[in-house]
Structure formats: C-alpha cells, structure tokens
Length: 311
Image 1 (spheres, rainbow, N blue to C red):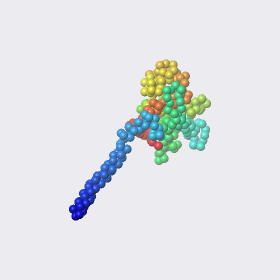
Image 2 (spheres, one colour):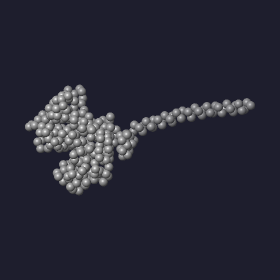
Image 3 (cartoon, helix red, strand yellow):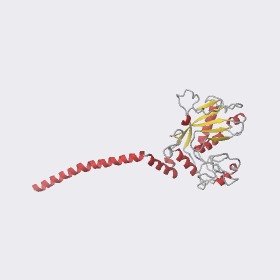
Image 4 (cartoon, rainbow, N blue to C red):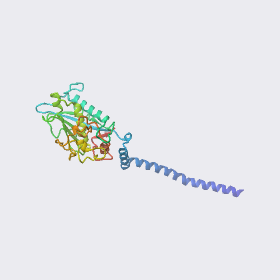
C-alpha cells in the first residue's frame, strides 16, 4: 500500500515537473506564432505580393482608393488674359474657382463610373479607385485660394508645393483650343491644358467636361500609360488592339508623343481614356492594373509618394 502511494506521489511529482517545462514552452510557441504573424503583416514585401495578387485578380474590394493631390494654376495670356479671381460662391463660368471646381468634379465623376469602349476586348467597369483632391496648407501665407493659383506669366517657380502635388497648368497659346501635354510617363508632377479660357471667351464648343476628359488622359500618361493606338502599348494583344484604335493605319510608333494625323482615332468608335475621342471614359483591365501597380507605394515605392495618399 505504501509502495503504491509512493509511486502515485512520484507520478504526480513527475507530471508536475513536466508541466513546468511544457507549459512555458507552449506559451513561448504561441507567442512566437503571434510575432511571426505580426511580422508577416508588416513585411512590405509580403504585403506587396498580396496586393499585386489582388490587382491581378481584379479584387477591387481589397484595393486601396487613392487621393491624388493636385494644384491648379491659371496663367494669364498677354492678349486674352485668363480666368478671374472670383469667390467660391460666384458661378460665372469665367471665375477660375468655379471653373476649376467644375473641371475636377467632372473628372472625378468619370473616374467613379468607368464605361465601356466598343472595340476593347474587355473593359474595367465602375470605380477607377483614384480621384483628384485640391491640396492646400492653411498656414501657407500666399495660398489665398486653397490650392488654386493665378499667375501673370509662366515660370518654373510657379509650383509653391512642388512635388507634394500634381500641378495642372491652365493656359492659352492662341493656337490650340483643346490640347494637353504631360511632363512624362514616369510620375512627374506637372501637365498643361491648352485653350480653356479661349473657349470661354469666344464661346467655343469645348467646356469643362472636355477638359476633364483631357485631364484624365494626360494623368493617364503620367501614371505610365501609352496611347491606346501606340504600337508598343503593353496591353496590345491582351485586351487592347492598337490597330483598331488607330483606325487609319496599323498603329502609331510613339507611346506618348503627339499623333500628327497618322492615326484617326476619332473615327475608331473607341471610348478609351488613352485615345483621341469624344468620351474618353473607359480603361481596359490591363491598363487599370498598370495604374494600380504604379500607384501603390509598396509595389512602386519610388513613385508618386508625394502625389498620392491612401484614403
């Protein structure tokens, strides 16, 4: 009887000793697993790979919505002047603040409701997942109009917020009634829209809606997209046909250069944002993926950090 009792006591003691070693190890293991999970979530590479997977699968529920900070610069023409400095409540079309609001609202509306292009193999419908936001710093002593500026002449130094924003310059040259140019294809920080005030002054046919389409087109270049009719378009053969977009020729051999009549995209029945057409309200999934990959700061950490914020 005593032997059985001793054996039982020894067994209980051994179990107790084992528990002293096992329980801390179990706790340590659980803690390490939590730390590993936390590290994997915070790991930029892992996060980027997951994000790229969401983009490739068009998993828009997990895609960030980007706010592209912009400033608008009205530049005075020596002969025709430019939009005047009105109050926000002034709804006169030649009031720069009012016209700028119409421009951005319409451009954002298009980006919120992408449509279809009849000649694309596929189209990205609905929200483009990026919009424009006029950026301003309340403490900036010369920012009188909240990110909208009026200048007597164009000069390199007219960008007070520099690379913090995408600078949209509105100016006239007496020749172009609806034209634009972007500073490049690699997330530079400025573009020019030509002819807006001439259309207002002389009651031309191109209103803010036309310039909103033009704005989206030029920003598409800055975000890395070629013309839809460009031969070297990376979406060619995927869901975009540059020959069909070109209409009057096989394709155009410049990604972003001006098309001097070599392609007549206006007759191609295309609505693609990166073409020359009246609607410019469509992107293919391939084009949209390229924009999203370029916009994501972890996928392309060196691009547009100053111009884009996740909201």
